[in-house]
Structure formats: C-alpha cells, structure tokens
Image 1 (tube, helix red, strand yellow):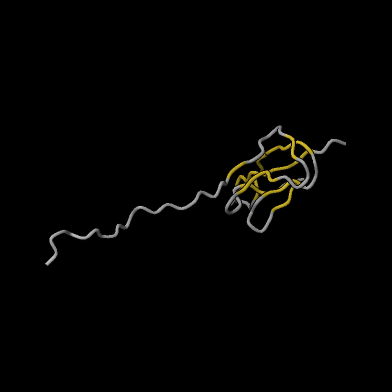
Image 2 (cartoon, helix red, strand yellow; image 1 turned 45 degrees about the horizontal axis):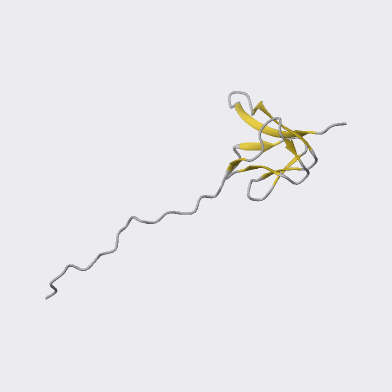
Amino acid sequence: MAHKKSQGSTALGRDSISKRLGVKLYAGETASAGAIIIRQKGTKYHPGENTKMGKDYTIYAKNTGIVSFYRKRVGQIGKNKVKVFVLVKTKK
C-alpha cells in the first residue's frame, strides 16, 4: 500500500494560443497595396471598394489609399440586416 497519494492529472491547466484577430488598420489610416486591414473568423466585416477577402476571411487592401468603414442595409423586405463594409479610398 502506498504511503503517499500520487499526483493526479487535472482537467484544467491548458490554454490555447491567441489568434491575434481584429482590426489592424482603422478609419483614416493609410493602407498600402496588399496590407492586412482586418483579420477575422467569419464575415463580421465585408469587403468593399479596393479591398479583397482571403480564404480565411482576412480583408486586404488591393490598392494604396485611406481606410474607411460604412454600414449598409442589405437584404430582402422584412429581413433587412445592417452590414459593415470596409473600403480603401484611392487618391485620383
């Protein structure tokens, strides 16, 4: 018979590595072509003018310009939703 109780394993004590999601460039900041504007899981933000969405839902700038956000009602009658779009305004 053991004289000391052995140390058991615990169900806690694990932690996952953070994914560093979120807005990387805010409204009014300058984005160069190919710069990451938002990293996200799913489509909380949608790509607008001069932006592109990657396969992991990351929104990139297609051209150099100033980052801007706007809300737009999208949907059918009775099912309207307000979606947030990201765009890059280029200087002409």
